[in-house]
Length: 319
Image 1 (cartoon, helix red, strand yellow):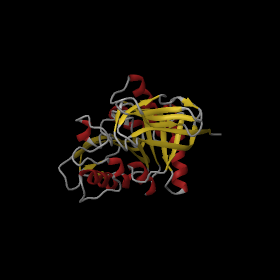
Image 2: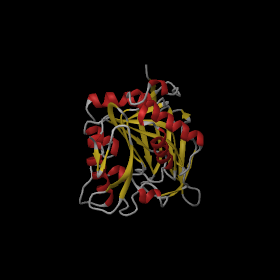
Image 3: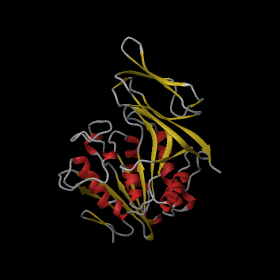
């Protein structure tokens, strides 16, 4: 029998409760949907960046809608990994320590709150999962096109299973990531096939965006055999893989003016955006290094040194 904190998961039941963060009074909301039939344990987390609300709402709704009688295995939802940020509309960071939770793994039980949350997620949830889906979005200052990351720093078997999960989402673009300190990337390094889904941003979402996000997750659950294949929804597009990605940060304090939108294609040499000073003098020009597509960008005009401006990728069609 699986146990998460003090919660014992029983076959055929929907179990919800609070998971205590190690060495802290913060508790994290967890809901587990336990099928009557045997199958894998799938972990789904949301709200690692607390103001990425579409991921939180996707997890909240699916945790209520999925029927234990129609599930093989167990789906464990961590509904809000960073509740302090979710309830205060805080971008990127855990308010108590000002750290990015998605850069805190594997965490420390005697560290700052971000490190304690990461340690708790790793030891209580990663350790019991067979597969993992991490739900993200553009933050309050960002917009992203719909795409999915899979890990590139794990062993070949895990990367292969993760890439199949990424393909199963039905999303147009997938990206092989070199990250190692995020929740999903660290789980993959520990042997758990994992993906991270991106969609939307700006601290809000539409009904259509939410429906598409839920469809992406349901597609993966179907691929893993957790729900019936008859429940699988139609995939959106034939998938392309980003084979080269550029992540551009600001080198100056100023005002950012992008010239492209997430999902928009461009040619090598095109101007993707510029940072200007208050007088309109260009401080930084971002020209495309290759033909590609905009993955995400900052929509906030004011930026500081080191702030993310734009990410774009060069794609190839998968056979």
